[in-house]
Length: 490
Image (cartoon, rainbow, N blue to C red; front, side):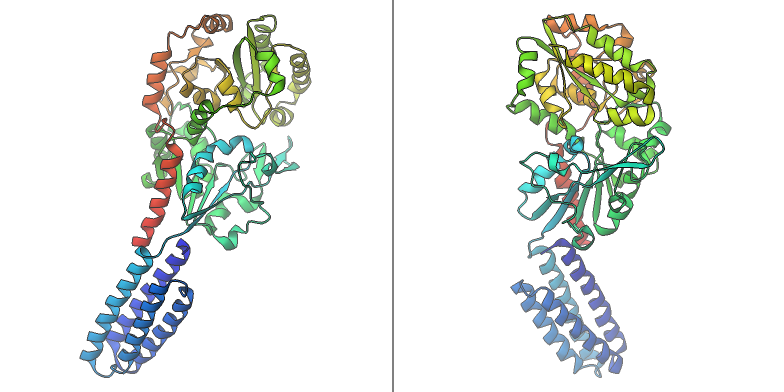
């Protein structure tokens, strides 16, 4: 039986208990009218649970007992004794509904970008294992915006997901009527994103009306903040505000949400499923794309991850990216997989249009190089697994990569390396250009298979993030379901 149906039945039993209590206190004609109403309600309830034999039979016994009580409404003592027995029978009925009928739940996962599915996938894997759960992956449509904030393109990425994932079209999933017990989202923005916007039907403010539990799981791995006020930019977006539960990746992450006004019991410090995804990808055998094989064969592979942050903050971004590539172009011992952020092109067009011509020229140049490939897929994990080292700015991939144990060089700014920041993940054991490690230094280190900071890096990382052993999705699913089922006992 669906959990929502159980809720409705239990709510009805509370009304029944109020009704028989009224009859007990008043007696006479008023009691007779109320007890007849209770019989009618139980007949309706019997129809609702007709497929559950034990509950249906027990309801029949309660009906018989109430009908007997109707004949006693003018004898206060006999009526009270009869009502007390009925009250106990209703308690027993509640027990049967809660404990002796399997509880089925429906869970909807509503990603909007395939590249962000990794924030939900390991939770979905657990949901699929649960025989008492019907789970649906419902990618939702979104719009790209132009520089003026107008919609310029409608997008739907449901066809881009792995064939291993059964996709349900948003056109076929009527969540308003189905009212899934749980909805998982990774998009915090609703109308507040400058680059994209999900269809308003899927705003968190609307989804929250049709589910018992709206769960927000950040699509990114959080890094660090100067203070609570800086975190407010993300912590007080519509998604976190409208959600029933927020999944935090670490205790520090949880404390920042609380500092920005969220109730402590709303925040679950259970980690990020993106770390599950990274671990799983590194264990799996993968098929290297044919166009990559000749580029990376017998070479050290560097994954270069360029970020939105860099585009927005670096006034000389294209030239600086080109300098990084120039360090590798003529080196036959190295190869590079360049992974631009999935929103790179729309960010440039919308917010940095003066970069566009130079960016297109850079792409053309890279395409002609024999030791560099551009990875535009929705899945970063092939590149993460294949690579020997990472070069990146401030990015989720930077923090995810730490779990692999492989070396990484970051060119994030000095402010993000200050010791007194609030670290949701401690990345200070990495290598940084702002601490004197050049691209050439890092390249030589990797070529010589040296990584003197590895032990320090891994210790800092593991001590700062929750559930980095691959169990994050499992624990999120179990915790959310447990909290949902606990509501039946209230």
